[in-house]
Length: 331
Image (cartoon, rainbow, N blue to C red):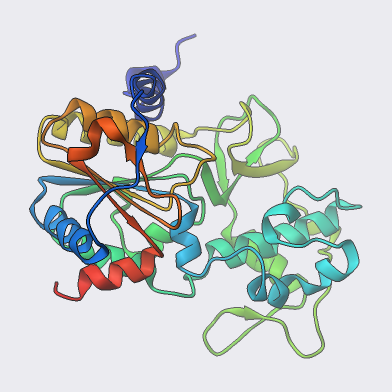
């Protein structure tokens, strides 16, 4: 039976295939760019202001710059009890920990989701990027799952979260190909652990502390068949690409096609080496295919591009939030 999604363009697969096929042609090595820092800031500001369209590709480095760190003080503030009992050292690894029971596992996930999805990032880095894009025709593709673009005010019709969303569950039943909003459950599970809302409305740990379990009755289940649920995060082929995901993928494909021969700025921010086929490689290839395009890479210690597109590219090494401040200084 043909899936109706087959009728829509799939920007996710199309660009990955383009990137994988095209990256093999970049045989001359990599460049870390030229020019001093201030010159590159001025050039990027000009490219943003004059481009016909901007395609933003964002990775984990952007959220790190915004203060959504997974270790250190922020982890210790909200997960010190899990650290003490289970030896968990950071939020990321905790997501894979073999907890002794479901009540404890879902207590962890309630916190994991809440502090990375349902509150604003500690630093206004995403809002600064939104200000930079004021009046621009832009589209965002991101491997981040923390929903911070939408929280900052970016148009949700021009956002594509490729790897899922902390705000969604999916059933373990492979026949149920839809996602479930988890906001109401998260709030209940946080309260059940003893968290209380502060004056700012954000859940905090009271003086008497919190517990590391939720009631058995609060363990989330799929309403359709009572099956267990898991996070809607891409880890294997069981990941559910629901209607919203396919709609965003099609919108991304359409945006790329409309501007593929025009003056496009491919603005890559904080994309690491874990999933280069989703953003980095396709951006390189689309830049090479369009002599009017510009590729800009903003990253901390990982800013580079193929030498074949050197004349169309620029790198700025550093923290994204600090780079945005410099770009906005004369805006």
